[in-house]
Picture 1 (cartoon, rainbow, N blue to C red):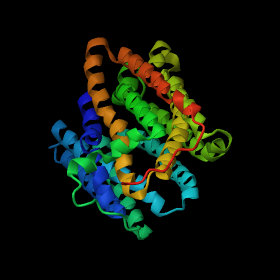
Picture 2: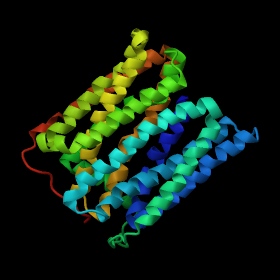
Picture 3: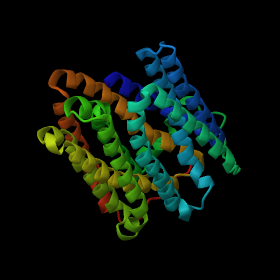
Picture 4: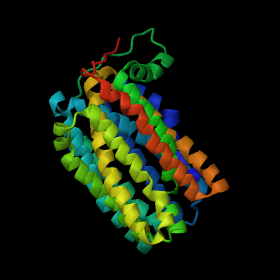
Length: 367
């Protein structure tokens, strides 16, 4: 489980910086369509291999790795594409609505998946996932908005310079730098939670796949609520206070995972609470973070900055997942989850200096 979880997120660690360069130098809409079609083909191969009794763990690892690369491309592209579609003053609302739609899918998806896995097995259920990417590709193709022309890299700029431009931009910006440090720390420790999120409730807590689907769907409900209220919260709480507050709530809710082993009768309730409250706070955090990046970074650099933030956040999941698999084999899943929860909670300390800001962050443009 540790290896399989690490493979998908390793694509972020190894490929995200290059993805940023590609997104900044190519049509973002085209990248999104291509990534969707590629993921549909990859996932569609799983049920075919299963039906022919040829499916092996190596196939799943290959699919996870390649799909992870395409997911990096899509995510960096869509975060960079939004400013081409809406005015700057509408970015927050655009991110809120996008997150709200994803959260709605998170409510329906896990509930459906838990039932489908039980009725038609996991490989066949993946076929529906493949079809969903075809629908996504058609939806992006239907947008049809022409992107503004972006400045090409200067002729003497090396590939290494382009690759590192996103990280250098983030490190030079006070607010983005703190957000990067917090994300890198939180996602490193979250690797343990991520790795065992499906295995731990079923093997240790004794929950069914349907119960697990309900718990995950609760997270979707929390995200939906967060998406609905993020705008109102932003009007009351400035982002420099919202970031540490929401990150603190996320950290506290991570404790519910290992705590469920202490109170097994309340296991499902604790997992549902962790998902509802944690995902609510995560949605508020994510909408603010994405909007801040899109606001303070120019279009020519935005893909590489988005990629740098993915490199420092989701990329850390691969390292955390591998470490969690090794540590759990020595001290057990429950103790590993306690370590992960503590690390996520302590990562909030990085954001404390944000509350001392007296002015709005400056806009960064490509030199």
